[in-house]
Image (cartoon, rainbow over all chains, first blue to last red; front, side, top):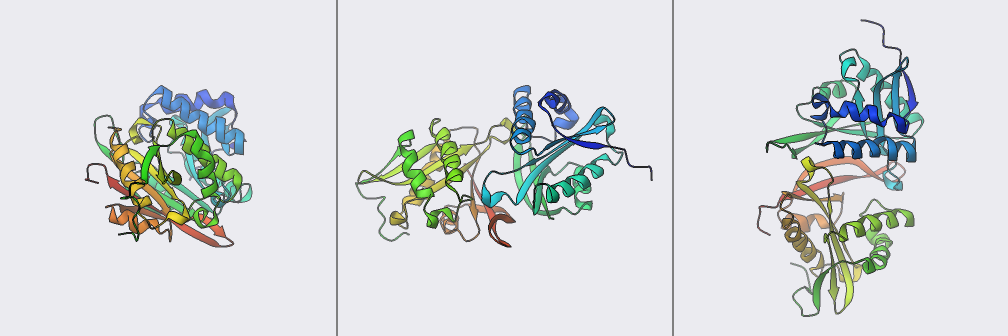
Length: 168
Length: 175
């Protein structure tokens, strides 16, 4: 087992939006997200870093040295009854996959969810075909439902969304 | 079948909602008997939700139920922003407690379904309700099926939570 990659977490800044946008433009990444074009990607990045990052401080950028190697975000709610739980998104540098980075990020994310945001429940949505499901399951996320035919691709095929969550 | 169905009476009508409906909608959502079935608990929460609702009303997505010129209920569909998921819409309904169990909710949901069918891209109509919500039986009567349930979604007190139930129906099905 190789040593874990030395990474640090910083609150995302608006100037990092173009990096996130560029990653999401790559077809191999974009296929796991609901956006289809530049306009939608720009909007998603503005929501991710521009809104959640600015409003709640819940968007994080992960660095290895000076290089950005990942992002994650808690989609926190301003509504009192929903503040105990959060959906999250995570994305790893396309060239840094398969090196245990996703696992490292999720581990730290769970610590921060409890310690800094007082979250009790973390949940996620992932397409059935996404191999990251195995990673989430191995880190304690349990499938609680399937939203069948949630997403319709341009060619008319449908994808199911798998719903997973973990009490902290 | 609701007792004393007022929706067949001449004093009942549905109109597209306008900004003028916001204060009454807010007033109803501040009522604890209604609020318990929404993830809202403060005036700020309610104002945010009403603002969002009214934004959709500008796209012809919202209906107001009148009975004898009094606003007795509201319904709206919320559209999803990205093309791949725009096949879904989420419906919400609020009925004045004095006019509940009189067919108003059923009429609003039926008409919201028809309204959503005007948006050709929408294939599924969804309603998110919380554990124990009486709207469940109405949805089941209108052929909605539970797509999934998420436990712990709404926190209603110390170590006390309500699940969210996602109901949906195909827009191909007759109303």
